[in-house]
Every structure is written in C-alpha cells, then in structure tokens.
Length: 128
Image (cartoon, rainbow, N blue to C red; front, side, top):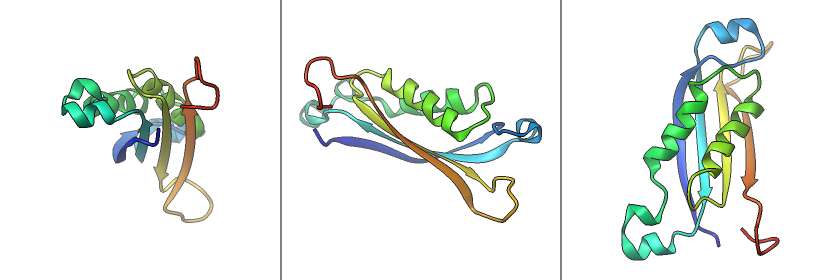
C-alpha cells in the first residue's frame, strides 16, 4: 500500500524548548504530517467515513503543540505520532516539526526533526 495523505505547514505559536525562556515566550513552529492508509474505499465511495477526517488530524496535532511544554522537538514529534496512530485506518505516519529561529549561537531559519512511526503489524510481518 502506497497511499498517503499529507498536511503541510500547520502553524503554531507554542512554548516548548530546553531553556526556561523558551517556555515563557511563544515561538513559531510548523508541523508537516503524512498518514499512510488505504485510500481505495474512500476513492470509490467519496465518503469521509472511508478515510481520515483532516479536521481530526489537525486537532490531534494542535492538542500536542498547545499542550504541556516539552523540552525537545523529538518529544513533540513522538507525541504527535502517537496521537495520529490512534486515529482509525492510519497504519503509519511521518511527522516533521520545525522550530523557526531557534535561540542558537548562529543565525538559522529553523531546527527540524522528522520521524516515521508505524503500527505493529498484527498478521503480516513487514507490511503496513
């Protein structure tokens, strides 16, 4: 199965970071997510019930980004992946989290983490 839904550049102001001042002042973040699922039924039926609701995806990401502060981008990405894998029909996810203008010793546009996570296969090892 090679079907994906991608939502790109979801934007948030949030208070995450390893340093105390990062938790006090909101900073700019963006999140890209990819959801792997079988889109054949939705393509044939044209019914939202046969796919994943984009609104639910956005709300799952928002809950993490606007939730309790985390020190690491890695922790944000992992928490988002767990939320998305809990959605019906989703077999695997990619999550990319960017923190714009992180407070480092040199100027840069963003720091970024990208992860891939999949549900454990129950009957067919090696297949999503």
